[in-house]
Image (cartoon, rainbow, N blue to C red; front, side, top):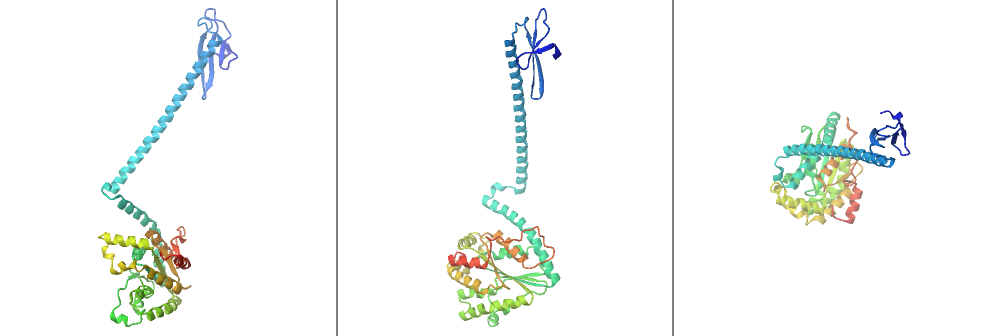
Length: 373
């Protein structure tokens, strides 16, 4: 069909033949473009089909509408297919994830959901600690190479998380070059010795770390409250300990003092768990039973200890320990920031979390307002 044989009408897209067929008359055609495609359709003849321009225009519009409708239906089908494909991909992905999780978790439906969530969270927590545990190994290697000695004191109320922190800190360390010291009641011989003597016998040699799970600061808090020392012995200790620690630091000892600060409510929750859980009942002692009743007395001694025994050479680092994982992470940061060891991974975040790693001044201010810690 040659368009030169047709002439435009006064309606866009409607054409009529120049020549007149003796039997059929003039021929009307529709010619237009839609969605980047060109469409041509013979509408009919003036004589054969009694086609007027008005009727031809109506036929052309019907044809146009059918093309648009088909295109829309096609577009909708394409969109529907895309959505269906996307849905199928999502279903397949979820199915694969579900199969993988079931393979990993096993018969998880039989487990208490809280226990399951707690267990999964512990995995994430352990993974977060690993880069810092690697740094602790580097620190340990540096101490050995430089023949340096390090003491880390872990203090805090009962159930404040000291033991758990020590286990995470030492988990991957070389056990030939660190020791954990947790002294029990002094013997009769030790009672008649200089108070610090039984601690000094456990001090590190060159290249070694000693972690004290409770330390000589028993005399600052526990002993005076339970009557294990006299007021005079307590006061002598408070007056002398700062100088003792300054002498240690002057002689090259790296001394780190960590105080794990647990709230009264969280301590009670942990005690209750120890009582109820057969796996933890061994942790609960007669002293623990009195800890809540003697909370205010411990708070007074804690306040005095922090105020009088923190110093520039041996400051206290307060670690809020209601969240055990965050407390452990901050304790690691404090230890790692204590010396400039070789090979530090500067891509890690060594900045203190100020909601967990609290300055002594801030802790004392908080304690003046409330004895909750």
